[in-house]
Length: 344
Image (cartoon, rainbow, N blue to C red; front, side, top):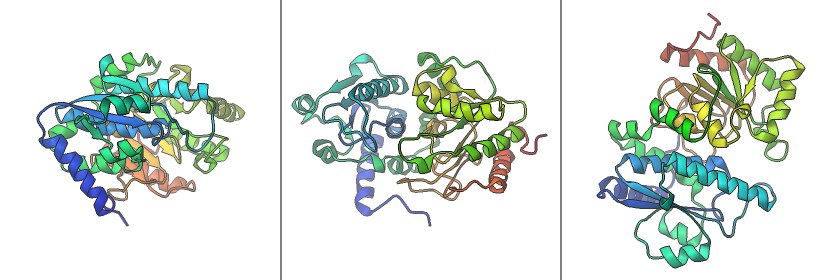
C-alpha cells in the first residue's frame, strides 16, 4: 500500500515550506546541515541538495551552513581524520551542486551559529524548531521533495532537473574526465563493515553482470563503488575474467562517481549503493531495492517526476533474473535509444 507523505504534522510542515518558497518574492534562503542530527553520509546530503534545487528553481538564492561541532557519526565508528575528509568532500559537493559563491557557504561551530543566526529570518530548512533543537529531520526530506514537485508547474520541474549541458558543466567543475562517451553504470555495494544485508554478494555480482552484458552488448559496464570496496569487486571480476571498468579509476571523489552515473546511457542498482543523482537526470535507470523512509508514488516510481523509463522497484531483496528482464523490457519500450534486452 502506498502511503501519502506521512502524518498530519509532517504535512503541515511541508505546506509551510512549500508556500514560503513558492509565494515569497525572490530572496536568499538559508539551509542548515548539522552533523549532530544528520549523518556524515553522501546519500543524506544528496537528498538535501535535491530540495535545494527546488528552491533555486523557484527563483531564490541559497546560503548553505554546515554545523560541524558535536559531530556524531551514525552506524559505525571512524577516526576523526576520516570524518574531516568526509566533511570536506560534502562541502565541496555543496559548492559545486548548488553553484555557491564562496561567501554563501559557511562551516561553523554550534556556538558560533547560535550567536550569528539565532534570530535570522532567512533560515528555511530544516524547520526552525529542528535547527535550534538540533533534531533529526533528514528522514522527511525526500517526502518533502515529492510533496513540492507534485504541486509545481512543468517549468519548475524542468529547472529542478539537471540538463545535459549542466551535467557536462558539473563534470568539468568536479574534474571528472571519463574515457567513455557511451557506457552503462552499475552501483555495487560490498561494504564488509556494516549493513551487510544491503551488499551485493559475489554470486549476485556474476548473475547481474551476465544480465547487463547480454542486455547491452557492446557498451562498457562501469562499476561505481566506494574506494574500500573497489578491490573486492575487482577480485570478483578477475576470478572469471569479466570485463568491467571502475569510476574510481577516473575520479577520486564521490561527486565524480555521481556524475559518471548520471551521464551514463543507463544506471542499474541492486540493494544498496547510495547513488541518487540519476533521479535528477533524464536518463533511464532501474533500482531494485527497498525504499526506506521514502513514501512511494506507485509500484514503479519513487519520484513524482520520474518518466516511464525510470523505475525504482521495491522489495527486491532476492535476485530474480526473470523479473529484472521484464522490468528492463518495460524501460526499453519507453526509451528506444537503449539496445534491446534480448541482445539485438
